[in-house]
Image 1 (cartoon, rainbow, N blue to C red):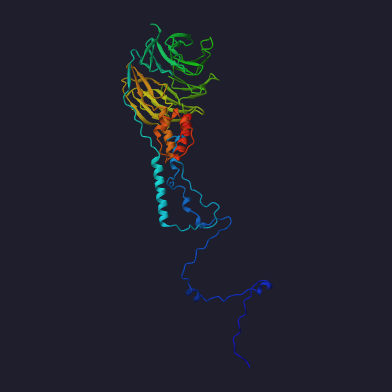
Image 2: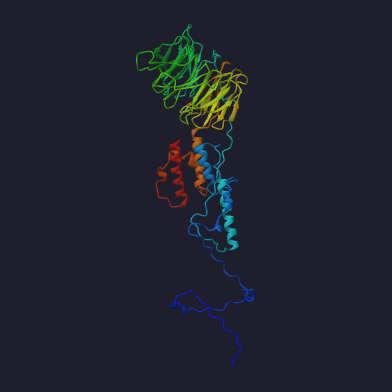
Length: 516
């Protein structure tokens, strides 16, 4: 008897080994409508997305970091330290570094799911970070603009002080003694007790054209209108040497540690060694007109000379030919100064037709910068305490200008002389300058900070960065501490956090003071 029954569907066939087929069970697949209705009521946990072994997960990539032209992100906690380090190494006006994109996807091959946090904990942490950042920014001391007195603190009469651009009649020794050439006499003025001593009188047929102290400050070299170079002992007021060689007046002198260089209107530079009996040991002939500027570098390796031929020449002791011939100036070059802060950095100033201060790298002869001052540049001098220099000028304002290097921003402009300021010298402590002019006056200006002030400021900046919560007396540490650094008062073992911080600060102060 035939039965009308539909054939049963064949069981699914899997391509598996026969040994595994008996242990497999397949559940029937639900219909599409069943799938739409059986939606779970609770959300399923998110799945962790893994990527390939060598291709990071795209969800953790930050594509906005690829826009390298965007502005840099806000400063982090170490931003004050970074700014201080960049300012001390590259100068206060150095540009900020180019923005960079931090790589946050290095060796990460899955998506991060941060764990949930309490909103109160997040708010507390954010508030703490804001306070910390604010305290770090506010604790960094900002140096206020330095106030330079606009009037001299002392004015001395200097009768017969000549108004001659090519002479150098004022110099200040390391023993705090000022030498001034007035007519045919040289006078010494002690800055310690204001005592005036007449050193010499050259007689009616001769006159003083240049004065220059040795670096030790015991002997004074004098250039005369007859072309001689005399060496005088200032303590005994006695001449110990007279050297000839020039045909006409000797208007500029420069001492190195062992050699005295003299420049003359005869266009030559003579090298004198007072240890040998001859008048001079070598002659440099490179200028085509009178030599009016002469300066040895601080390491005694290079000699810079400026002439009325608008040329700036650089010499060394191994050759009688200039190693550099710089011709960018368009007027006579009397103002020459070597930087005490950077080796091979030379500053020069031109006369009335030029009016520019130019900076040179003597290692390669490149001109680094040029500044038009608007008037004749008569003298230049670097300060050893700060990276600044002072220039004196002639027509039309007869001013004294203080510049910050390398930005060449003007710190101060001083006036008072009624004629061009032809003479300039700096005190041994680097704080005071004396200027002389054809108005027959010497004016003393206190324009630069002391070395002690610089040390104190740098130490306070270090304290504020590394010890922002230290509540010890900074004024005591910076002023009284030099005499008690690591002394008996701090020999006991530290018993508190503040004591340990103070000992660290003492070590930092000692290191900074030794560096400066």
